[in-house]
Length: 114
Length: 115
Image (cartoon, rainbow over all chains, first blue to last red; front, top):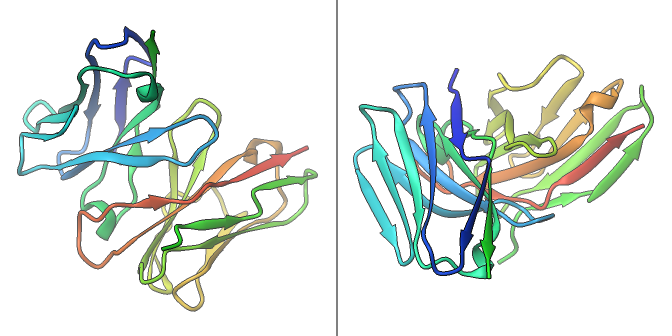
């Protein structure tokens, strides 16, 4: 089955700086790669996703890049703000929300230092 | 509209007991998923329903775990003979399904504690 590795487990950055979280996956059949943000005691919420036919996607301060050959994808957050502090999870699946479950990484605890 | 809801929010039980966890998906979502999240870990896939049928139950850890979705809407996750290792937050998610690449919307979870 699919295996998703995520690094780092904890990331501390100064407010206003950029943060990068990296994930690798094992199943070359995976085609959908979402990122979820989970605040303490809350449900995971989708912040951005990317499909395998796209190499990069941006949404304001958030971007995701995908390298299918190397089987890795990354989340980039620019101009970090205190409200970005949370645990971020990457995930992978073959078809996304249409036909199979997501395989998640172990998460990255992002800490924004004021 | 209303999001995914789960009941109860917390459940404390004793080892060996039977528990049922309920999930109400977003109206119109045909796909429903159950995940388990242990402390400090990412959600772990358990089972996926498309309509009333379990399309993929490969994540269920053993035969003590069972889930149903008899009318294609509400789903119940059932755990028999609970063990302390079953303690976790059980998350439910739903999506439009039928076509790929749809966002999975998560519920708030049920925190299960087995004493």
